Length: 319
Length: 319
Image (tube, rainbow over all chains, first blue to last red; front, side, top):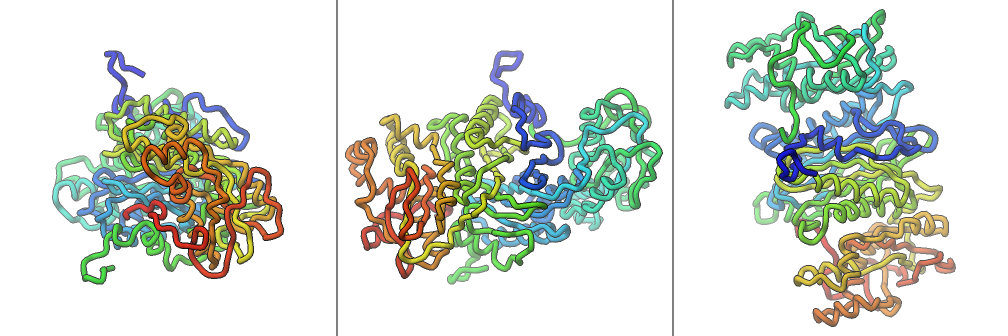
């Protein structure tokens, strides 16, 4: 594989999503693979039913900093990212495995607290750590795989149709505001710093939306515009977000004012809060706790109030 | 957690197995966890049945070297280590996820070939890659999680009883001989170098042994003495290996002669070949392809011809 210039293509050149596309290209379908790569979780047939499975990796210095997050918080966050993926399919997580790599001079207490954080976050949905692997490495890496029960309706990214309503449930923009604050050397407002350290995904929102007839759903991990972009692309539709639908919480207003940033940018492009976004039929009443934030249209891409949003749209590794 | 000297305990101090014990200590049992941490794979109840799940991580410079193994071979090896864990429970792997971390300047073709290796090895048992995650890191890390169907009999490590026969099926010592050769700057005998690069676990031996009434089973990944030590400890028994039961293959004899090492040491302490070892009732006829290599006794620990084996016993991370 070479680039236009003739040099070998690196994974930076391809980017995270390009690499995933290259790696999964041409994979044959198998009868047990009900949903393959490309959604929040895969669905695999089992004797008597099916399970959902998803994996996510955190690397020190990239996804977390030792001076910003405790081991326990890294565990909570790593687990939350995985558990939210199962929720986003309308399922409930049941078990996790941990691949843990770290330098030999890391204090063992760090690993113990990490796993306690993972276990406590998993307990919120009744899931348990069932296995793992530890290995030596220069960096700390936490690779969590989660499996879960599928609900009666498994909700994918590709089911949105023009005319439908886009709904959101869960905090959004808080973790990004917390990261902005920490990046400038501050530790307050404490609520947003805590939101970065320990997201609070609305796990029950997944099965709730599935039961209410959601036609597509996604865990917002990379930013609302970026993640709704995945829904739009998978579904072959456009999505327009109505910015006035968002109530900007007070801490986001303060952070925005303090650092000279429109607080809505945290909500539109900030990741790591793991709210769920879903589309519902136009005539559906949104389930409790969900807010209508936009609509599905003919076309492609994601707009805000009908226009392209100018800020950087979401985080992508290697870019 | 502090050591006897008062300094904080590092994960090097605890070692791989000590760390696993610390991390899994006090984890409560849950109804869906049929087999928890500590075996080759966990078993988790699903609606209508159960699945097996296991995870394993490879790190560049530690588990593989770019100049010794191609990306494709690393993929084959990483997948083999995981698939063998499912076989060692008597099960059959069905699906894998890949957590992949790498520096941005890695050629994308490396990642593509890695995943092809994983896919091809998985295809040997009918398993498929169903998902993954890619992220930036300084080192290349491959964290594979595999799920599989449990057979009618799930075979654990803890079922061996005194008087039983220890059986082995699959190549043993070849990968260690290959590693010894590569470590001395040679590339031959080619068969052992290839065995290091691409193990050939006898995947069907797992379900075969389960059907034949195996009372315990393990994937030999860290060395025969080390891994039978896990069986002995879990089962509360001693195991004695009869060295004359091993036929030393010609390539191991040559490598041993060339580097001045007893070739049996490759077979007793070398890892990464992934044969399966199992215990069978004393009166059982070993299934086809299995060789009797020892017996289960009262007591604890693993001996060779009744005596402690003097060489280093197996690989442990952080030691």
